[in-house]
Image (cartoon, rainbow, N blue to C red; front, side, top):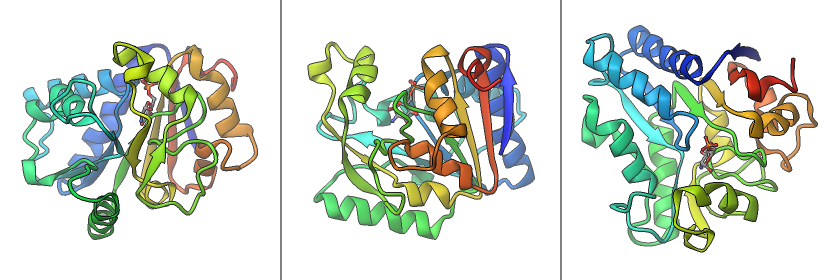
Length: 240
Ligand code: GLP
């Protein structure tokens, strides 16, 4: 694994964006896996700037998102559909029919099967990940088997507490979500994990130095053949 420690959020964002820009230059038809949360927000702003400056095009690419809440309307600002549209997709030239965000239309099993099928058809070249304070990736909570493919997950208390800042109160944070599984994530050819802030330092330490265990879902990334971790100074204080 390759670890890059950067000074601040600005550098973290630029570094993350550079990985995507280089990937698209090298292979314009790349399939990207994207994440939500506050860590990649600045990276998306850098991508929008690069697109506006004609330094990158998404016109031949395809994007997958990791996860989505269950039980909220996708037009609602807390949904990941809204987040992605608002923070990236509406500003770039990605064709609408090549945006894949997990979503429930009819049954849960239809939704998970459909997403897995799409992922099998379009293997991810570059997957961007964030890290939960409890070591989750996507919404793969501690205890999730490493063999998981797209599934419906129950969000644990820590995750709902962490994400309550985006909602009016913790009671409004959904209890369940649909997420790409760990096996889907590990299939990506290349993974870039973006880690920001002092509250991630323990999760990052455990992810890198801890035992590979479903209790720390991100620990499986130790086994990935092309993993880069980009962390800011505060998150990286425990691994220096
Ligand atoms: C959510 C998302 C994850 C993300 C995590 C960390 O739970 N499902 O994909 O990595 O939040 O988010 P943040 O970057 O806001 O700390």
